Each structure stands twice: as C-alpha cells, then as structure tokens.
Image 1 (cartoon, rainbow, N blue to C red):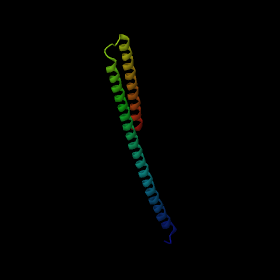
Image 2 (cartoon, rainbow, N blue to C red):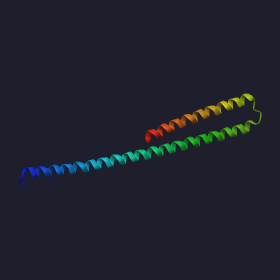
Image 3 (cartoon, rainbow, N blue to C red):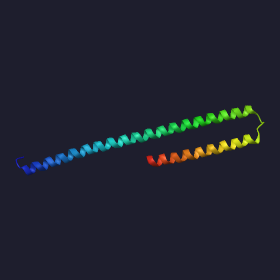
Image 4 (spheres, helix red, strand yellow):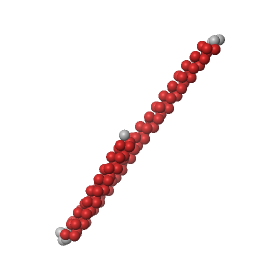
Length: 108
C-alpha cells in the first residue's frame, strides 16, 4: 500500500465497518433493555392488579360477613349510606380505568 489514496480508502472503509458494527451492538443493547423494561412494567402492572383485586375481594368478604352478622334490621339511612359507598367505589373504578388507559398509551 504505497499509494496514500488507496490506503485512505481502505482506512475509511474499515472505519465505516467498525462504526457500523458498534452502532449495531449499541442499538441491539438498547432494544434489549427496552424490551426488559417493558416486560418488567407489564409484570409489575399485573402484580398490582392482582393485589388490588385480592384486597377488594377480601374487603367485600369482610363487608358481607359483617352484614350477615348485623342482621336484617337495616334502616333506610343505612341503605342510603350503602348507595353512597357503591357510588364512591364506582367513581374509584372509573378513575383507575382512566389511569390504566393512560399508562397503556404511554407504554405503547
């Protein structure tokens, strides 16, 4: 390689190959990390959902148990309080659904 122009060509070509390989590795690593993050986020969301449902079921069972022991002497004000509680729970469910939709859109 006595010709500097030919040498410069091969050096430039080698630089381009090395840069291309390193970019490929960096991109692959970045996509791998993104995939891991997505999988972990989905798993945490699944665990969160399971925990929320489990607690809700326990609370419902406790409420049913306390209602069964309270008997049938329920007044109209108690049923009004029950309706208010149901409305609050529905509002919380709607809020959670909205937040879940925002999370899904952000992670998509």
